[in-house]
Picture 1 (tube, helix red, strand yellow):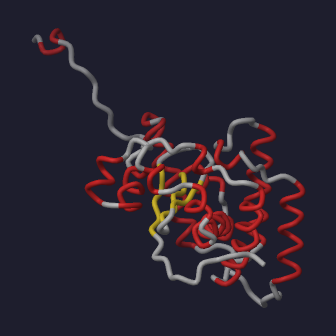
Picture 2 (tube, helix red, strand yellow; picture 1 turned 120 degrees about the horizontal axis):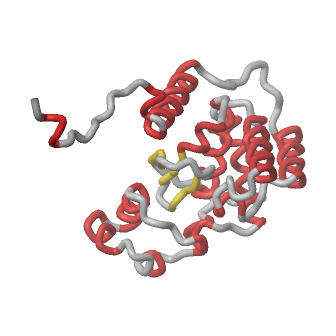
Amino acid sequence: MARHSDAKVPFTFYMVDSSALNAFALPGGYIFVNAGLIEIADDEDELAGAMAHEIAHVAARHMTRQATKSRIARMGVAPLGAVLGGWTGYAASQAAGVAIPMTFLSFGRKDEAEADYLGVQYAYAAGYDPTGVISIFEKLESLERKQPGAVSKAFASHPQDADRIGRTEREIQEILPAKATYVVTTSQYGDIRQRLIDLRAARENPEASGQPRLRAIQRRDLLP
């Protein structure tokens, strides 16, 4: 039987401004989702599936079992952590762009399987189509096959291979009764996702976006 915590955890979500395909969680309910993952998640249930997987890592206490607070204190984020205290300080440091040790974010296959098992149930309970989990897995697997390195090391440490996808499909069929309707996507999600894509594209190519640009003026340009 999969383990999970009965304690209620308030979750806090951050978007990381990075094209890397990644999402990760920290103890205390801090969930980080990279912009790149939002861009490839065409439908809301795909992003919900990825986030549910990370929520499951928190609920099952995977991080706290493999890293003590004394180890966190040695990760080079002590000053901010000392001000804010505990995991809150560490999470704020991550939002500020501090690198995260791979030893902390890499899970064994047992933990990943448990997060998959719990994650589809969380997505289903929230009203989403649980097959969105399968869809995002397949996209990540396809992208990594076509563009090795496209998926972050944290995600790629346990790839979305055919066995993992097949197991998750069987679990959805066996443990989740079919519903008449599911949330697949919403207009609000589509609008926010498109705005994110447009903002990132404009920043990378300001000339194409039509935004004004500053030009350095030479002294000779000021002469009559």
